[in-house]
Image (cartoon, rainbow, N blue to C red; front, side, top):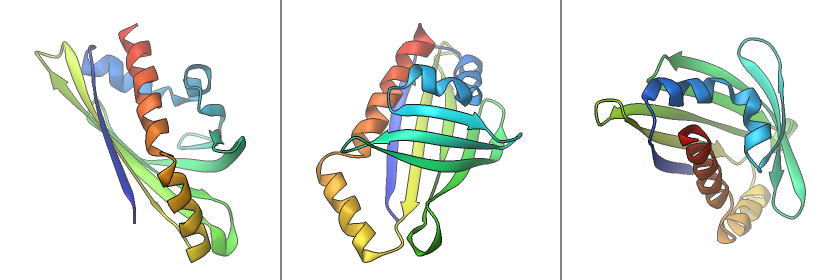
Amino acid sequence: MPVIEKEVRIEAPVERVFDFWQQFERFDELLSAVKSIESRGENKSRWIVRAPFNTTVEFVAETQEEVQNEYIRWASEHGAGPDTVTSGGEIFFKPLDDNAATHVLLRFEYEVPSQAAERVIATLSALGYPERDFDDNLEEIRQHVEG
């Protein structure tokens, strides 16, 4: 299962950084890769994100576990039937410098169901996707939270 890990230092207290991530419904206003987010109850949300070649990807994400100011864990499914791609991740928050800054570690993993899908993912990876999008999104979040 491929895993992507990204880290960023945000010059803000851990409480403010964690609070920002809890309000993910606003990500479509802030992140260029997110087209829309629709809440589906307390722990679920429907996302539409921009993908390569002027396409979009839709999925329902479910927050599975959360510890205030420490981490958030989620899982999602993309598609249906034999071509369903499962994904999930964790975001860890660690206060730095007497809580004047926060270290954020994002870990994202996904499972591709077929060889055909694996070839598509390999092609996209060669183009820098999705790693480049994670870098761009984390930079947009850092700039917004530091404000």
